[in-house]
Length: 318
Ligand code: ADP
Ligand code: MG
Image 1 (cartoon, rainbow, N blue to C red):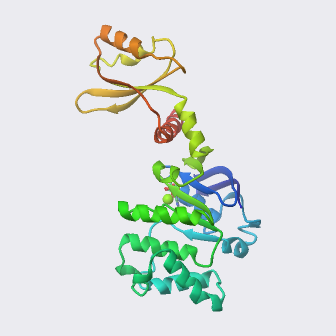
Image 2: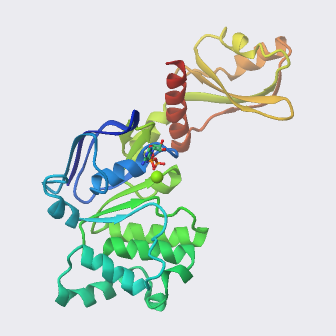
Image 3: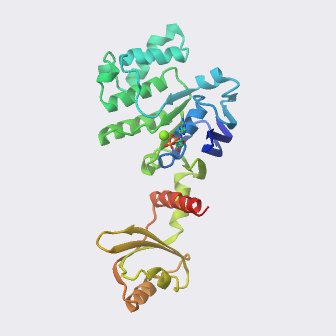
C-alpha cells in the first residue's frame, strides 16, 4: 500500500531523514516512534507529498507521489502535527474546504461532510468558529479534515499531543475504530501510545530506522535480556571496575545520579545467570552500600529508551 524506498531528506547540509526504507501493507496500523527531532514529521510530510525528498522514492497504492501526485494524494488523509490553523472558519466550513481540496464530488459532499462530523463527534460544534474550540475539539476537527473523502490511508502526526487523559482515550478509541477499515500510520514520541494500537512499530532516531517489528516481537527481544537494577552509595565511584570483575557481566550503565548521593545502574549479564548473590557479596566487601537490588522486568519502554540511548552513545563516539 505504501512503499518508502531509500528516502533521504536534507535541509542544507543537515540530514533530517537518512536513507529510510519500509513497506506498509493494506490494513496495517503502523506506529512511527521516536524522540523529538527524530524525523517523524519530515517522513510523514514526504509520504503525503507535502514536502519533497532529496533522494529516494515513495509509492502510494501504486502511484509515485511525485510523478502522480493527484492519484497518490487522493488515497491519503493527513492530520499534520499541531492543530488546524484555519481559525476564522467554522468547523463545517473547514471540513468543506478539505473536501474541496480532495475533489469530493459536489453531489456527495454534503452527505460526506455530515458523515465525518458524526464519526468525530463534532455535531454540537459544527457551526462554531475553530478558534473558539478547546484543544481536544480542534484535534478532532483536524481528524475530520483527514477523514473526509474516504481515503484508504490515514497519516496521523502525534494526534494526542496536548490532550487531557479523557480526550486521549477518545482519540485513541476513534483511531482503533478507524483501524478496522483503514491503513494507518501514526507517529508518537510515547511508546505506550503506539504499542496499544499498532501491529507494527518503526523506531526512528536521528533520521534513521533503528528497529521495525511487531510490538510483541520487540518486547520478546528485550525480555531475553538479563538485567539488574542496582541503587548504591559509592563514594569513590569504583563500582564499575568492581562489577566488571564478576564473570558474565556484559555491561554496566549509570541511569540515575540521585541528589541524595545514590546512583542507579543497570547491569546486563549473560543469559540464564543470576549474579545477584555475587554482586551483593562483592559490594559488601568493597564497602559499597546497596540501597536496592532488583531483577529488571524489561518492558518495551526500556527497549525503546535503550535503543535510543545506544544510538546516541555511538554518535557521541564518532
Ligand atoms: P520529529 O517530528 O520526529 O520531532 P522532525 O521531522 O520535525 O522531527 O524534524 C527532524 C529534524 O529536522 C529536526 O532536527 C528538525 O529541527 C529538522 N527540521 C525539520 N524541518 C526543518 C526545516 N524546514 N529546516 C531545517 N531543519 C528542519
Ligand atoms: Mg514531529
